[in-house]
Length: 218
Image (cartoon, rainbow, N blue to C red):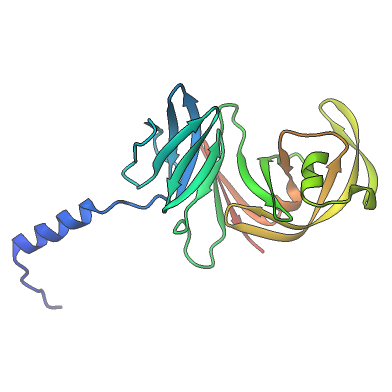
């Protein structure tokens, strides 16, 4: 194997150029909002506290803070995040890979923005739920006619609740989209759609500390 004798000055110049280029963030989540500052977690690393207008070395810019949510710029795109929510950039996975990285919120729950039948919803991972469970308001926005499903009774922490078994045309969380997923529409409104085992059974799940990784199996 031959070696090229490159002048040291040229090598230093190249290294300086590479160091000046921003590292693109793969996964961004909002850990908290404190007054006029927000705490972001980039690629599962240490929390970063930013004021509006500030940017991280990975190229994530905090645009504004609105109550318990923020607007950030990731890969040149404006994205709104609520506490505990996560967004993956376009370079987060290699082509063909379908992986989700979730960060635990202050209560230890794993939540993520997603979509059911193309309608935006907020999911909370619940390995104790047999199927995806959604409230009636989310079901209406997703165009689901619960009355066409089979009526069932579901045991919850607050007692027995009436629900209807349905099948969802599509469920999207992060980079993963699954089709024809069993779900239950509850007769009550819910703050989150529960991401139950009818979705999670098709994923490989791994948790390391405050980060959960879901990788599509089939």
